[in-house]
Amino acid sequence: MKGSPIITAIHILLTVGSVLFLMCTTDKVTGPGGSETVNTYAMVVISEDKEPVHNAKVRFIYSEQWLENLQAGKEVTAHTFLSNEEGKIAIDKEQMPQKYLNLLIDDENSGRFIPHFDPSGKTDTVVLVAHAFFQGRFENPDSLPKTVRLQGTDYLASVDQVTGKYSFSGVAPGSYEVLTETNGRYLPLAQIELERSRTTELNIEHSDSLPPVYDSLLVLNENMRPAENARVRFVDSEQWVKNVQTGNEVAEYTFLSNEQGIVILNEKPRSTSYNLVIDSENEGAFIPDFTISDESNDTVALLYYSTLKVLFENSDSIPDYLFIEGSDYQAESVLPGEFIFNTIAPGVYRVFTMFDDSLSFLDTVHLLKSDTTEIVISNTDLEDSTGVLIDDFNDGTRDNMLVPELDLGTWYIVKCNNVQVTFPQSRETDTSYIPPEDALVTEGAYEGRSLNLHYNVPSEYFYLIIGSQISASENGLEGIEAVTFRAKGNDHLTLRLHGEEGDNRDFPQASFSVELSSEWTQFVVTPDRFHIWDQNSENPTWESVAGRLQWISFMPEGFGDEIWLDDIRLEGVTLGDLVE
Image (cartoon, rainbow, N blue to C red; front, side, top):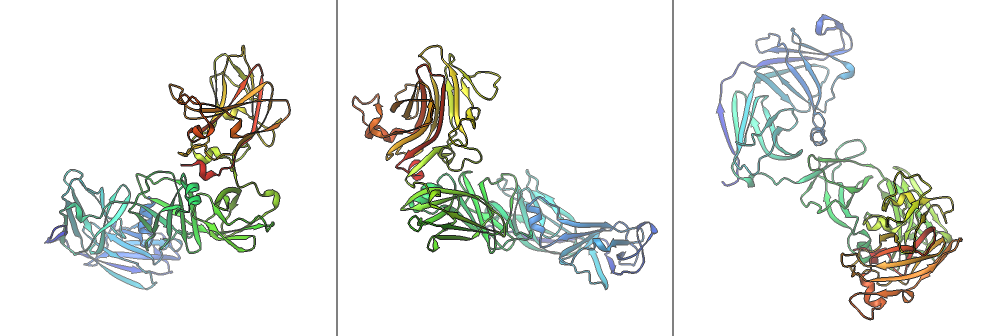
């Protein structure tokens, strides 16, 4: 039948098997080298004709952890011993393997596989029988795995990438599950029974006989055991704000782990802009900007849950919902003004509020496993929910600024060659591009840090531009009620909103000039105050160009020599209005 494996048994006469006697004791026994040891477990390997077997290879293989160790690139063999000339193996009591391990023994021509071997403390007799042989071929050259493995053992065969052939020799007889491996991803192929002195052949005729090769994850709990039925979600971080504000699902892909803790990603996330969120009973994990490995399976270890409580003191300022940025965690008020996230993976999060479909940043929290974090929000903690902070240039993660939210880059500072710029920090060369971090200072700042430039111009014809992209929406800056910023310095400063600059400089722009002083001043520029320019229109208006404006820049004018900037905001819009 098409797609069915062909299994052929061929009888081959091999050597006589052996008998293994396992004697577990705490008496004195003779160990390797003839020395006497106490408190050891002793094993004696003898052949079927009761002759000692020298150099019998005894391995204890992880059984329950076998696949996860492979997926994580770890050893599958817990302990390995060789018998001495008397066929004896002395195992220190501290090293004695536990009963959850498989026992695998091979000498030159015979072997034995015992799943979940239990060292009971009594005398155990195990008969080693002649080795079995296992081979086969993958006949479709376009779908060749790299290796074939027998589950629960260290038996491994490479697949010839030209002929598709693979071959095992010297395999202990027994029942095995056959797995294929491609780029570190293991998939079951067939269940086989290998008999002594026989060759079993497993040929795969068609590519559709093999399961499709998908990316996968291995999910382990806090005790490093497989986490079954873990709910795995991929959340698009770039679209998170937009999806929350429009009421769409933020988790684009959802999977469940199987009993081995493996998650088969039969739908591969289309980009790397995904956060990974996992929950399993009382454990979870949150990994921002998770990238699936191309070479091997990824392993994620879960941690015990955290709890987050947020209490709003002002009953008139209670939001509709709270959201954890970049995840599908959200909370409604269980009591007036009280929000509780009972089961949330440990991590550092940004918390957002939702007022009447308007999303606003609230606070940053660091949640520890098995811990409860409580935040009390007073009236002074609440910010206007109908405005967006573009940047305040403060230290740390700068959690509430818009520029990293858009993931479009940071501020740029450029100048012409005849402008000389100096900074509090020393610079080796004066280049036309200035790293923004070089211009952030604390002394003299409005609050925390502010952007500060000292410059010298030889004439009034020069340019010095501080700018950034502030909208990635197809609607540009439609809907803003004002641009506000704080500044100080001398002479004049021009605020400019514009479209993407091109070679022909035909982008629309809106500009407004303010006069600076030595004291910090907040400027509020409403759309009706801008001077509008559009090469494609004789009488452009704010309404005609606003949808094409995506950038903001500040340009010193006149013969000044210093500029300070801070607390740059857009009023009347939300984050969701400015993302794609």
